[in-house]
Length: 246
Ligand code: CAA
Image (cartoon, rainbow, N blue to C red):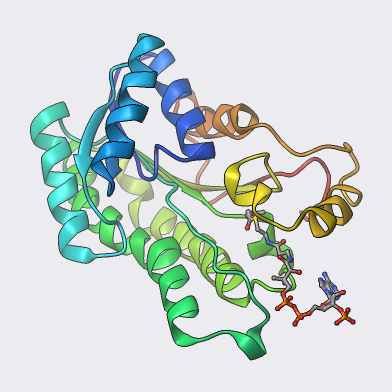
């Protein structure tokens, strides 16, 4: 395995932390962004106790200027970004007839527009170096829709449209672009769903439990390997059998 610099957006979150840990244990230099310095310090210290030194830079992926300066800071501190995982995401769940523009736009900006904001400053370097791995963290709910998530499902479905276009444009440059679509994983985001609603959702999962963050990280890491060089434009659903498309 060639050690590379990997930028994982939203690396301090539930799935993000597992991706950072997995890529770091494979020998990559891993960077992530933060918005809250106190939270970031505590998280970085916890990772250090596991022997993982994460390169941390301030940055809001929803803001184009902030995302660009975040990428430049990572390049300066850790080297050119060869692996990008667009993982940062939020929910603002409510039924559409009650949804306001802020709930719509916060989710679309953070989950979908961030793919432009972060990938745009990274892509030219990858093309010049003729190697790159880009992974979008989408969602089962981008594939099947979800009551209460018109904003989130639209953004997550859009992420895969981004993947399959970018995959075509950059295939000749040694860059693969793929999507991972997690189902319901036991993170703070999913635990914020009211318990009685969550129990009904878990009852629909054939494997019979929520996913574990490391089960998502494993798939992300697979796409970033040298050996995965002929896989591009794919979507890998990891959801305990909750939604079986093909
Ligand atoms: N199908 C049909 N009806 C449903 C439904 C469903 N899936 N879910 C809720 N309802 C019904 C309820 O039974 C209730 O019916 P009654 O009024 O007849 O009792 C009604 O909808 C409630 O509607 P409201 O307009 O009052 O809904 P609300 O404003 O209270 O919002 C909600 C409810 C926010 C949608 C809540 O049900 C909820 O949190 N649902 C879960 C959403 C979800 O799955 N979010 C995923 C978060 S995790 C994540 O996003 C990670 C990932 O990628 C998987």
